[in-house]
Length: 335
Image (cartoon, rainbow, N blue to C red; front, side, top):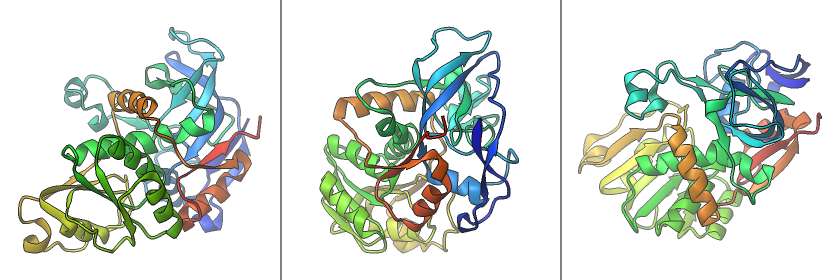
Protein backbone atom coordinates (compact mmCIF):
# COMPACT_ATOMS: atom_id res chain seq x y z
CA UNK A 1 0.00 0.00 0.00
CA UNK A 2 0.99 3.66 -0.29
CA UNK A 3 1.46 5.66 2.89
CA UNK A 4 2.87 9.04 3.91
CA UNK A 5 5.59 8.84 6.57
CA UNK A 6 7.43 11.41 8.69
CA UNK A 7 10.98 10.56 7.69
CA UNK A 8 12.60 13.41 9.60
CA UNK A 9 10.44 15.91 11.49
CA UNK A 10 10.97 19.48 10.37
CA UNK A 11 9.28 22.54 8.85
CA UNK A 12 6.53 21.42 6.50
CA UNK A 13 7.88 23.86 3.90
CA UNK A 14 10.89 21.51 3.63
CA UNK A 15 8.71 18.48 2.76
CA UNK A 16 9.39 16.22 5.75
CA UNK A 17 6.75 13.69 4.59
CA UNK A 18 7.59 10.92 2.13
CA UNK A 19 5.11 8.85 0.12
CA UNK A 20 6.31 5.27 0.56
CA UNK A 21 5.34 1.68 -0.21
CA UNK A 22 4.52 -0.44 2.82
CA UNK A 23 2.82 -3.78 3.38
CA UNK A 24 -0.86 -3.63 4.26
CA UNK A 25 -0.85 -3.86 8.07
CA UNK A 26 -2.07 -7.00 9.82
CA UNK A 27 -4.70 -6.25 12.48
CA UNK A 28 -3.97 -7.54 15.97
CA UNK A 29 -6.33 -10.01 17.61
CA UNK A 30 -8.48 -7.19 19.02
CA UNK A 31 -8.16 -4.84 16.03
CA UNK A 32 -9.86 -3.94 12.78
CA UNK A 33 -8.14 -3.37 9.46
CA UNK A 34 -9.68 -0.24 7.94
CA UNK A 35 -9.60 0.77 4.28
CA UNK A 36 -9.27 4.56 4.42
CA UNK A 37 -11.80 6.56 2.42
CA UNK A 38 -11.21 10.03 3.92
CA UNK A 39 -8.95 11.52 6.59
CA UNK A 40 -9.21 14.98 8.11
CA UNK A 41 -6.12 17.18 8.35
CA UNK A 42 -5.64 18.21 11.97
CA UNK A 43 -3.20 20.72 13.41
CA UNK A 44 -1.86 17.89 15.57
CA UNK A 45 -0.70 16.21 12.34
CA UNK A 46 1.30 19.36 11.66
CA UNK A 47 2.82 19.21 15.17
CA UNK A 48 3.83 15.56 14.61
CA UNK A 49 5.26 16.33 11.17
CA UNK A 50 7.25 19.38 12.31
CA UNK A 51 8.49 17.81 15.56
CA UNK A 52 6.58 20.04 18.00
CA UNK A 53 5.49 16.73 19.51
CA UNK A 54 8.39 14.38 20.29
CA UNK A 55 8.87 11.39 18.02
CA UNK A 56 7.18 8.29 19.44
CA UNK A 57 7.26 6.08 16.36
CA UNK A 58 10.00 6.79 13.82
CA UNK A 59 8.60 7.05 10.32
CA UNK A 60 5.04 7.30 11.60
CA UNK A 61 2.10 7.81 9.27
CA UNK A 62 0.04 10.79 10.54
CA UNK A 63 -3.74 11.13 10.50
CA UNK A 64 -6.39 10.51 13.13
CA UNK A 65 -9.68 11.73 11.65
CA UNK A 66 -10.27 8.62 9.59
CA UNK A 67 -13.45 7.46 7.91
CA UNK A 68 -13.15 4.06 6.28
CA UNK A 69 -14.62 0.62 5.86
CA UNK A 70 -13.78 -2.57 7.72
CA UNK A 71 -11.44 -4.62 5.51
CA UNK A 72 -10.39 -7.26 8.05
CA UNK A 73 -11.03 -8.42 11.62
CA UNK A 74 -8.69 -9.72 14.28
CA UNK A 75 -9.31 -13.20 15.67
CA UNK A 76 -10.95 -11.89 18.87
CA UNK A 77 -13.17 -9.22 17.27
CA UNK A 78 -16.95 -9.52 17.13
CA UNK A 79 -19.74 -7.03 16.44
CA UNK A 80 -18.26 -5.62 13.22
CA UNK A 81 -18.72 -6.81 9.63
CA UNK A 82 -16.55 -6.37 6.53
CA UNK A 83 -17.59 -3.30 4.55
CA UNK A 84 -19.09 -1.51 7.57
CA UNK A 85 -18.20 2.18 7.82
CA UNK A 86 -16.26 3.17 10.97
CA UNK A 87 -14.34 6.11 12.36
CA UNK A 88 -10.82 6.13 13.76
CA UNK A 89 -9.92 8.99 16.13
CA UNK A 90 -6.93 10.29 18.12
CA UNK A 91 -7.30 8.17 21.27
CA UNK A 92 -6.23 4.68 20.21
CA UNK A 93 -5.85 2.63 23.37
CA UNK A 94 -5.78 2.89 27.19
CA UNK A 95 -4.95 0.32 29.85
CA UNK A 96 -8.51 0.34 31.24
CA UNK A 97 -7.28 -0.44 34.75
CA UNK A 98 -5.53 2.65 36.09
CA UNK A 99 -7.18 5.02 38.56
CA UNK A 100 -7.99 7.49 35.77
CA UNK A 101 -9.67 4.90 33.55
CA UNK A 102 -11.63 3.48 36.47
CA UNK A 103 -13.05 6.90 37.37
CA UNK A 104 -14.03 7.64 33.76
CA UNK A 105 -11.08 9.87 32.87
CA UNK A 106 -9.42 7.59 30.33
CA UNK A 107 -8.07 10.65 28.52
CA UNK A 108 -5.60 10.98 31.42
CA UNK A 109 -4.42 7.34 31.31
CA UNK A 110 -0.59 7.32 31.60
CA UNK A 111 -0.48 4.33 29.25
CA UNK A 112 -2.67 5.90 26.56
CA UNK A 113 -1.65 5.54 22.92
CA UNK A 114 -2.59 7.75 19.97
CA UNK A 115 -3.36 7.25 16.29
CA UNK A 116 -0.87 8.93 14.00
CA UNK A 117 1.68 9.39 16.81
CA UNK A 118 2.21 6.07 18.60
CA UNK A 119 0.74 4.03 15.73
CA UNK A 120 0.36 4.61 12.02
CA UNK A 121 -2.69 6.64 11.07
CA UNK A 122 -4.85 7.57 8.13
CA UNK A 123 -2.54 9.28 5.63
CA UNK A 124 -2.43 5.87 3.92
CA UNK A 125 -4.60 3.41 2.04
CA UNK A 126 -5.10 1.27 5.15
CA UNK A 127 -4.80 1.62 8.91
CA UNK A 128 -5.70 -0.42 11.99
CA UNK A 129 -7.66 0.39 15.13
CA UNK A 130 -8.54 -1.53 18.30
CA UNK A 131 -12.17 -2.53 17.84
CA UNK A 132 -13.06 -1.07 21.26
CA UNK A 133 -11.87 2.36 20.04
CA UNK A 134 -13.53 2.30 16.61
CA UNK A 135 -16.48 4.68 16.38
CA UNK A 136 -19.91 3.96 15.00
CA UNK A 137 -20.81 6.77 12.62
CA UNK A 138 -24.19 8.48 12.13
CA UNK A 139 -26.00 7.95 8.87
CA UNK A 140 -26.82 10.83 6.59
CA UNK A 141 -23.35 12.36 6.34
CA UNK A 142 -20.78 11.56 3.69
CA UNK A 143 -17.18 10.60 4.44
CA UNK A 144 -15.76 14.10 3.92
CA UNK A 145 -18.33 15.71 6.21
CA UNK A 146 -17.72 13.14 8.95
CA UNK A 147 -13.92 13.15 9.01
CA UNK A 148 -13.35 16.48 10.86
CA UNK A 149 -15.91 15.53 13.50
CA UNK A 150 -13.63 12.71 14.69
CA UNK A 151 -11.05 14.98 16.31
CA UNK A 152 -11.72 18.65 15.60
CA UNK A 153 -15.33 18.19 16.61
CA UNK A 154 -14.72 15.95 19.60
CA UNK A 155 -11.90 18.08 21.04
CA UNK A 156 -13.88 21.27 20.50
CA UNK A 157 -16.79 19.68 22.36
CA UNK A 158 -14.57 18.69 25.29
CA UNK A 159 -12.98 22.16 25.35
CA UNK A 160 -16.46 23.71 25.47
CA UNK A 161 -17.43 21.56 28.42
CA UNK A 162 -14.14 22.38 30.18
CA UNK A 163 -14.88 26.08 29.70
CA UNK A 164 -18.01 25.78 31.91
CA UNK A 165 -20.10 28.10 29.75
CA UNK A 166 -23.29 29.02 31.63
CA UNK A 167 -26.67 28.74 29.85
CA UNK A 168 -27.05 31.64 27.43
CA UNK A 169 -23.49 32.71 28.21
CA UNK A 170 -20.96 34.79 26.30
CA UNK A 171 -18.25 32.65 24.69
CA UNK A 172 -15.01 33.83 23.10
CA UNK A 173 -13.14 31.66 20.58
CA UNK A 174 -9.50 32.48 19.86
CA UNK A 175 -8.58 30.99 16.50
CA UNK A 176 -11.27 29.75 14.12
CA UNK A 177 -10.10 26.69 12.26
CA UNK A 178 -11.41 23.14 11.99
CA UNK A 179 -12.16 22.64 15.67
CA UNK A 180 -13.42 26.11 16.56
CA UNK A 181 -15.95 26.37 13.74
CA UNK A 182 -17.56 23.10 14.92
CA UNK A 183 -17.44 24.14 18.57
CA UNK A 184 -19.15 27.42 17.65
CA UNK A 185 -22.06 25.56 16.09
CA UNK A 186 -22.57 23.51 19.26
CA UNK A 187 -22.44 26.61 21.46
CA UNK A 188 -24.85 28.53 19.24
CA UNK A 189 -27.27 25.59 19.17
CA UNK A 190 -27.21 25.63 22.98
CA UNK A 191 -28.07 29.34 23.10
CA UNK A 192 -24.69 31.03 23.59
CA UNK A 193 -23.52 34.38 22.22
CA UNK A 194 -20.26 33.69 20.41
CA UNK A 195 -17.45 36.17 19.74
CA UNK A 196 -14.57 35.13 17.50
CA UNK A 197 -11.02 36.48 17.62
CA UNK A 198 -8.84 35.21 14.78
CA UNK A 199 -6.22 36.43 12.32
CA UNK A 200 -7.79 35.38 9.01
CA UNK A 201 -10.36 37.44 7.13
CA UNK A 202 -11.91 34.31 5.58
CA UNK A 203 -12.25 32.72 9.02
CA UNK A 204 -13.92 35.86 10.37
CA UNK A 205 -16.38 35.81 7.48
CA UNK A 206 -17.18 32.15 8.16
CA UNK A 207 -17.74 32.92 11.85
CA UNK A 208 -20.32 35.57 11.01
CA UNK A 209 -21.99 33.32 8.45
CA UNK A 210 -22.38 30.63 11.12
CA UNK A 211 -24.05 33.09 13.49
CA UNK A 212 -21.29 34.59 15.65
CA UNK A 213 -22.24 37.88 17.27
CA UNK A 214 -18.90 39.42 16.31
CA UNK A 215 -15.60 38.56 14.66
CA UNK A 216 -12.38 40.56 15.02
CA UNK A 217 -8.60 40.24 15.02
CA UNK A 218 -7.03 37.69 17.38
CA UNK A 219 -5.63 40.37 19.72
CA UNK A 220 -8.68 42.62 19.67
CA UNK A 221 -11.00 42.91 22.66
CA UNK A 222 -14.47 41.40 22.22
CA UNK A 223 -17.39 43.85 22.39
CA UNK A 224 -18.51 42.55 25.79
CA UNK A 225 -16.94 40.67 28.72
CA UNK A 226 -16.84 36.89 28.29
CA UNK A 227 -18.19 34.23 30.64
CA UNK A 228 -15.94 31.62 29.01
CA UNK A 229 -13.27 31.44 26.33
CA UNK A 230 -11.46 28.73 24.43
CA UNK A 231 -7.99 29.12 22.95
CA UNK A 232 -7.67 27.04 19.77
CA UNK A 233 -4.70 28.89 18.26
CA UNK A 234 -1.39 27.38 19.50
CA UNK A 235 -0.17 30.85 20.51
CA UNK A 236 0.80 31.33 24.16
CA UNK A 237 0.81 35.12 23.76
CA UNK A 238 -2.98 34.96 23.53
CA UNK A 239 -3.43 33.48 27.00
CA UNK A 240 -3.20 36.81 28.89
CA UNK A 241 -5.22 38.49 26.14
CA UNK A 242 -8.04 35.99 26.59
CA UNK A 243 -7.86 36.09 30.39
CA UNK A 244 -8.23 39.87 30.37
CA UNK A 245 -11.34 39.51 28.19
CA UNK A 246 -13.06 37.32 30.79
CA UNK A 247 -15.66 38.65 33.17
CA UNK A 248 -15.35 37.88 36.88
CA UNK A 249 -15.40 34.13 37.51
CA UNK A 250 -14.74 33.37 33.84
CA UNK A 251 -12.93 30.28 32.56
CA UNK A 252 -10.38 29.97 29.76
CA UNK A 253 -9.76 26.48 28.38
CA UNK A 254 -6.78 25.74 26.12
CA UNK A 255 -7.76 23.21 23.48
CA UNK A 256 -4.48 22.41 21.72
CA UNK A 257 -1.99 19.64 22.42
CA UNK A 258 0.87 22.09 21.78
CA UNK A 259 1.17 25.75 22.81
CA UNK A 260 4.03 28.20 22.47
CA UNK A 261 5.35 29.69 25.70
CA UNK A 262 2.91 31.72 27.78
CA UNK A 263 4.28 35.12 28.81
CA UNK A 264 4.28 36.17 32.44
CA UNK A 265 0.78 36.72 33.81
CA UNK A 266 -0.13 39.68 35.97
CA UNK A 267 -2.21 38.47 38.89
CA UNK A 268 -4.30 41.64 39.34
CA UNK A 269 -5.28 42.14 35.67
CA UNK A 270 -5.17 38.57 34.34
CA UNK A 271 -6.21 36.13 37.09
CA UNK A 272 -7.85 38.01 39.93
CA UNK A 273 -11.62 37.82 40.52
CA UNK A 274 -11.54 34.01 40.46
CA UNK A 275 -10.74 33.61 36.80
CA UNK A 276 -9.57 30.10 35.85
CA UNK A 277 -7.13 28.71 33.27
CA UNK A 278 -7.71 25.07 32.28
CA UNK A 279 -6.05 22.69 29.84
CA UNK A 280 -7.72 20.08 27.68
CA UNK A 281 -6.14 16.65 27.26
CA UNK A 282 -7.38 14.39 24.47
CA UNK A 283 -10.90 13.03 24.94
CA UNK A 284 -12.78 10.03 26.19
CA UNK A 285 -14.85 7.65 24.09
CA UNK A 286 -17.88 8.96 25.94
CA UNK A 287 -17.01 12.47 24.67
CA UNK A 288 -16.97 11.08 21.15
CA UNK A 289 -20.32 9.31 21.48
CA UNK A 290 -21.96 12.36 23.06
CA UNK A 291 -20.60 14.74 20.45
CA UNK A 292 -21.49 12.60 17.43
CA UNK A 293 -25.06 12.24 18.74
CA UNK A 294 -25.29 15.99 19.42
CA UNK A 295 -23.83 16.85 16.01
CA UNK A 296 -26.45 14.69 14.31
CA UNK A 297 -29.25 16.21 16.40
CA UNK A 298 -28.25 19.85 15.83
CA UNK A 299 -27.03 19.51 12.26
CA UNK A 300 -23.43 20.46 13.05
CA UNK A 301 -21.55 20.56 9.73
CA UNK A 302 -17.92 21.07 8.88
CA UNK A 303 -16.88 23.57 6.23
CA UNK A 304 -14.49 21.38 4.25
CA UNK A 305 -11.84 21.71 1.57
CA UNK A 306 -10.83 18.45 -0.08
CA UNK A 307 -7.40 17.38 -1.23
CA UNK A 308 -6.42 14.07 -2.80
CA UNK A 309 -4.46 11.89 -0.38
CA UNK A 310 -1.54 12.11 -2.80
CA UNK A 311 -1.30 15.85 -1.93
CA UNK A 312 -1.30 15.49 1.87
CA UNK A 313 1.90 17.49 2.22
CA UNK A 314 0.35 20.47 0.41
CA UNK A 315 -2.71 20.29 2.67
CA UNK A 316 -0.44 20.61 5.72
CA UNK A 317 1.36 23.56 4.15
CA UNK A 318 -1.95 25.29 3.47
CA UNK A 319 -3.11 24.58 7.03
CA UNK A 320 0.02 26.17 8.47
CA UNK A 321 -0.30 29.22 6.22
CA UNK A 322 -4.00 29.68 7.01
CA UNK A 323 -4.99 29.41 3.36
CA UNK A 324 -8.45 27.94 4.02
CA UNK A 325 -11.26 28.35 6.48
CA UNK A 326 -12.91 25.38 8.18
CA UNK A 327 -11.15 22.04 7.75
CA UNK A 328 -9.16 20.19 5.10
CA UNK A 329 -9.97 16.56 4.30
CA UNK A 330 -7.85 14.09 2.33
CA UNK A 331 -9.80 11.83 -0.02
CA UNK A 332 -8.12 8.54 -0.87
CA UNK A 333 -7.06 8.63 -4.51
CA UNK A 334 -4.42 5.92 -4.06
CA UNK A 335 -6.80 2.95 -4.09
